[in-house]
Image 1 (cartoon, rainbow, N blue to C red):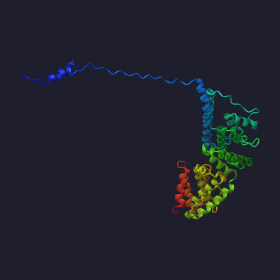
Image 2: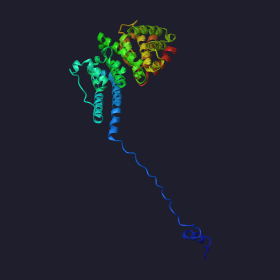
Image 3: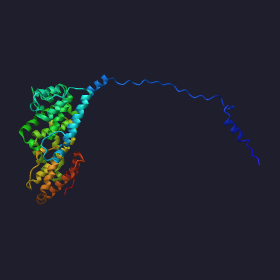
Image 4: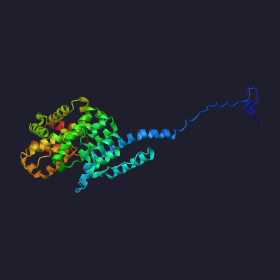
Length: 383
């Protein structure tokens, strides 16, 4: 048997013959085009040092202010875990943070060594604080904050350190002082608030905070507004708090028709508008307003409960200080639960239960909690 391979022979021939008629020439590889580049040189040591001298102090101010805010937020949990803790001092993490910042500054910028007052910390002179403001010696001011805080409020020649910092254009120093003020307010213990000297400090602090707001520092430091309102209430707002608590208590007695939550929120907004006078500042105060609104409703409900039972009123200096009012409110509910169950009317018991349930925990913002209270107490059908 034979096979005819004529059909496949031409194909095999073309594949094996590279110089056949189908080949026009030798294949040449495309030449790679050159594209030279010159890497940018590294910055000089002098340039790096100038950048460090410019940026490191600003970063120090930022971290010190952040540390002050974090300390004020954690103050409550620290105080509760240690009942015998009466002396305020920065936490270990804050100390380590400050130490690391100092080391960073010394290693890169090589600033002057942190000085101590000429007569020791027990006898710091006001002029030394003013000199630290002019020289932007932030570490010295932080030491004064911890060891001789009243000097930060003391006036020399009609100027406090904060006013002096603002007028001389040392904005970074002014921000550090404002952070120190906010930290001091949040660290205040209940026993200290009853002292006349503390009230005088709060009034001086209020003047300084108001000046800072007028100078426009509130635009970059949102927490400044809340600190000002808190200080204002603590220094001379007792009468206003008492008056609004009575109004909210009457609204609670009227049930949903009285719109108690709406009435409390409107009262806080009127007070803030009177003291601040600027709509854009009020808008940045929403969290504080929600906190204050919830506190007024709780204080009003408890005031109604005291008409039927014997107990202690909620301290006005707890007002709008995170969840202090709520803690005191629930503590009193637990202590007097038998009397409340026996003596209070059905509507009031329902309102107390709604407040306790809605305002519990920190996973939900005060603004959302107030919205829930409006839905239940102002717009709900009641018990």
